[in-house]
Image (cartoon, rainbow, N blue to C red; front, side, top):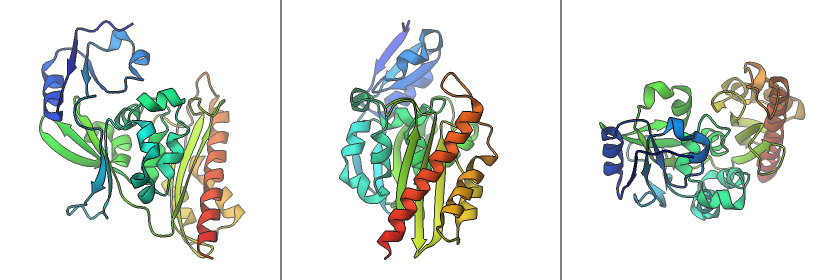
Length: 293
């Protein structure tokens, strides 16, 4: 049960950030509220309700000098269900986020869970982070000192440097994948809608049967989702054989100490992470090479 000292409902981002900084105690931004119960009352003194803050949009994103191609901007309070239904998003991300969202909990959860909440729940095995990492997405953050953008990769790997207490995720910007590239998402859990034991998202571009570029991201394996950079470098320029993809999957998890919990031992989680990567790579490469024929 939550034992709150304050609950603020805001209509804009500026008020949300201001109230967060002015309210005493430990706070939490909420919209769908699917993680509030698991957070628990001893850890939360106040909530900032973003459901009316105007962040439920999906629109074209113009790079405006950020050296990125135009893509799609998704507001932080867009629900997982609306993200999955968006043809605008699917047109730029190769359907990767739709795949990930459709493995995110039950239909009821997807109708409530938000994009921003899933990204911010980094301590949990959330489903969107690996997909956003593989897409090389950007986050727009708003704090007391103004607005700035950071890569999703930096948000997870350098969180203490790029994110301060009270910073609000305003939107996620998704650049289009390369022409001819294909994407795939794999999740391993006890049930289809269960919390992941391991998950993997990949984006692969091929020239014929040779990998031009590969992005590989893993979730639920380590303490934070991450890009498997050594495995990506290994695949670049190699033939798309079963052996090379299996080796890339092995490399992707070789330097990781998998977490353990009541769902899986460290050893089992590590093995399943490799399986998820290999399955995702096989699907993406098969689709990419067939599209080039």
